[in-house]
Image 1 (spheres, rainbow, N blue to C red):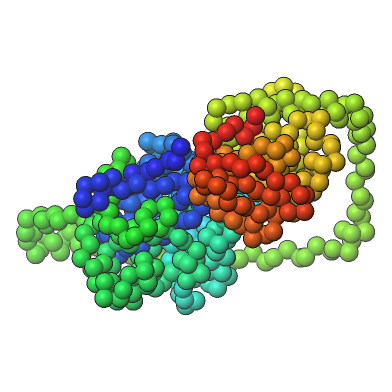
Image 2 (spheres, one colour; image 1 turned 135 degrees about the vertical axis):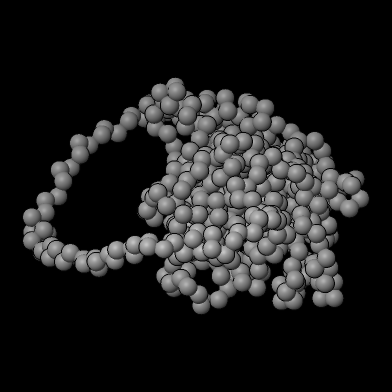
Length: 499
């Protein structure tokens, strides 16, 4: 079932929803001048999606730390950690799937760039088995991905932050990272970072250059860009596959938490103070001058170590005692136990739609509970999962026919191999072609349209050939194997792909 997040209401009073699963694949860009309600929009998105997906927030002003009170986010103060520590923290955040807020409020601007780059680098460089879906929200993104090189920060810090933001938006999807970036000025945001977003929410803006870029991103005519000046606070125009196929005005709904910083509120000054009393308050007589601190002199650096002497004294560590290789019987028994544990996982009602990384973590935990050794790495687990989802019995896996299908599947990306083997199982057994819903479940999604796009992509790669049959049925032939499924209804209900 698709997870729909209600972001607010349309002018007609209908609920304006966001497809969370689609957002994780296509990313989001939010733009609006100061006071337009960007932070309110991000807070609404974070609160509504917190029960469904892990989150990380890059928070330059400390506005989102209050999420910890309601939703349990871990607040990480960048001022308390070094850059290498933040990189390690980012790695641990991914491995342990904890939602966090990285507050940069207590550090200078250049240090903010370095800290954000280190933390994002830790998220991005995590091991493959930790690539679980994560929403990464970056407020004031123009600070970390500036369009121009001039500024008060060093080139090194700016390049590090821009590289981390580029990795997040351009290469993060395959690693499970879904970038959500917000900016006050589109003209100040690096174009290669903004261009990777497929969903947009544009708020109030006044400068012509920003209105023109917003209109271009939304596919609107330049004369329509004037409408962005008239938007009220909390009102945005949304467009994208996760939001709407046409520009849609949205009034963002209420939030449960509030920012720590209050907005400007009119407050009358105190009653008039007499001139002499004011002078005594502001310019006290006889106040001692502060002592001038003596300049701090740095201690001389210690002499550099003698590298050659250290190398001469180096001795290689003793070789660890070799671990005996398990026997063939032990390997076969472990494989049987691994398949039994995988069958337990897939027997769960909602197991198939879960991402492979989540299934792999569940698999490892169950192996530890049962004290079963020899855990496979993630690629080996993917192959084992693909065979299980395709419904191939363990004794048939070693057959020559099925090994030919496995060899063909390994030429495809890992996330498409399970679908290919599902089609191969149906073709080898002369069964009807699986429906779009069945293929979507094998692909790890609820979207039949994504399943159809995958089949079209596999056909472009000359891996399969889809044939239309009478009555709207479909069959699939596997190129190079000479196998073909029977005709099946593409609109049929989802079958149990793990049966």
